[in-house]
Figure 1: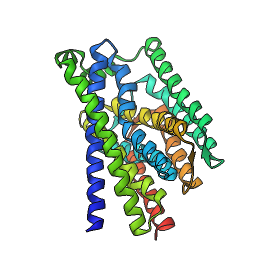
Figure 2: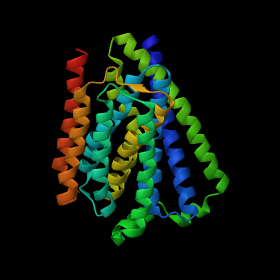
Figure 3: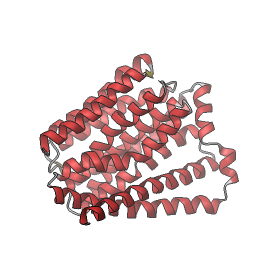
Length: 324
């Protein structure tokens, strides 16, 4: 019975995080395009931040409750899950063609953010000062994106793809009070979802003797990546490759800069049970994006299968290396 209760907490937390992210992203995206922000900017910034909101609430909650390794594992595992599982599944459904010049330019930004984060963690802790640097970087990244949108002329197909997903006319038809309600309801759901996920995840880890870092790198990370997975699967059925890639890359950047930055500002984050191999795997998945997006600008089903195999191989390795 106690195990069942823990599982129910996990399910309740996962559900609240999923719907919270959906409400927050839906309300914020429509509110933004309603007041003149271009659908392309909304897709590259607002949505990326919104789908990273579960990681933000969960990581802050874990760190403030005294589980810093679970806080870090959530972010590291989410980035691995985003690239390995989310992109892998999406590419398996359809070929992911990347037409956006902005997304190609974002890959080096993600790699730089990943390497910087790993370097900061090499001494065993992300300090408050380092958190401020990371958070300031996400502000700079957002300003950089806004400037690029004005100076880089995207293909018409890219603009239409984002306009179809974030239609300004449809947003204007939605009552303002409903959009505000969705945003507030999303924030409340994320708050409680993070708390419930923490209860179930920590309790299960202790009950079965599984290292907390492993739980966060796998189960918790997957749970907080569900919004990205759901969004990407729907977009892949519509063959919206740029939205999928933008969602994944943007979320990964926000995870490292915004989530860890904000978490460390509130309280320094110690590495705990996180090992260097976890960081190397995250860097490895990030490096795999460079030749794919810079040369062919397409992720094939074969490449998607490699990403999936890499993700499941890593989770299997975690089980035999730290659990079995």
